[in-house]
Length: 509
Image 1 (cartoon, one colour):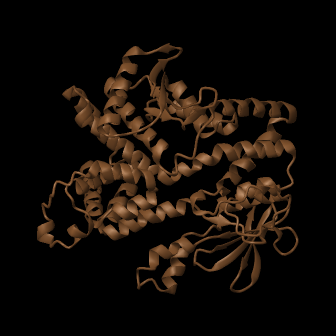
Image 2 (cartoon, one colour):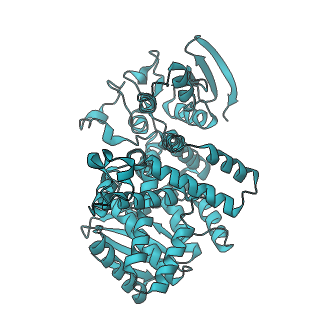
Image 3 (cartoon, rainbow, N blue to C red):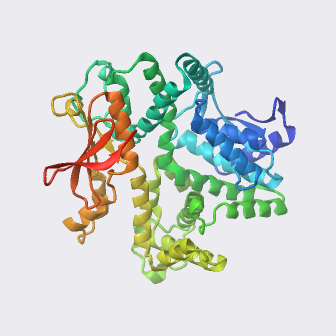
């Protein structure tokens, strides 16, 4: 494993030594595994550029906007960005994998050490978690994409190319984020010129690219966006990713850093970015504390049937010195998403402790704004079960699950495209709860309605690519089934219970 830290074209010997020392601790002491790493020391402008190109490698208005906004925020000290970790890059010429990591030159020595340890936690996830390890980045290919995109702009005009880019960016939300749940398709599945399809298709964007009537240059842009957007799957492991990296950072501070004063500074910095009182820090704060809780429970043997059958009095202070915490953590980061992680390991005792920590923090800091007071009031009445359901619920809401049903590419026998929303996953919320009657199930479904502005925009753009009407079967806010129709300009709503067809007051230009 090769680890270097570069400052421009030069090797930074001090931080290269530090980075290698920290890598030695996390690989030997915590059994982390990852490939080569190239750290690059950059200023605010450099890290803003790296961040912008990470989220959008093409030279579009969106990339430029992200770059300018982040640079201004960093320069005015409105926000902080300590590092930016790219995806694993496989260099075919050298036949090796490595990751480029941008470190902010403005970081203090303590911040730099803590951040490097934090990065190694991310890298272990990228190399070992089942969602992450299938996504690799090709930095050279992204450069080729940028050059090609600029040539297309010169040939066709910026407005024409950016219009296709906006459409492609919108349709990238129709990629399948759960490929491991699907049966693998035959190699010739996508080679047929017209597919109806003959079985449900979950990767809607891939299906549309392969079957819509696109100009060659349009398809080229869509293929670029599809390739780049595969990293969306990382959103499924945001909490476990940041939580594990923060846990690694603290382990280094407590047991890897030899200077006690430096260790204290690293720990202090860690707690400032994992504060449960700040909603934006939730992935760090919640994930980190849950990992610590799991480590303690498995170290003391507080798990499994033998522990469950103990009385409450026997469970208090129970410790059989099992010392299985690290082993368990390395196992669960391989096979879990955020949903699985929280559902399986966040028990009532942990959730109540976390809720109390939020309440205490909000009270100590003083809930002065209406938003903070509302948030405190909400947490005051929340039970551990409510809290857990709310977290899982928010994870599920974030990822709409759509598919093209069998024959959906020739809906109504006129070539229209039909999409359906899959709400079958909601059964996990009410199957074990006898109080979840049909009325409550409808109420729950209503939270997942796709009859909103963002969906309308995506449907219009999809209709412009498909060149036929696009339909979407979803639910309204009451949980009743409805069918949305887009002709590329206007949305109509068909109530599937009443069979009514009515245009809504919404159009897209």
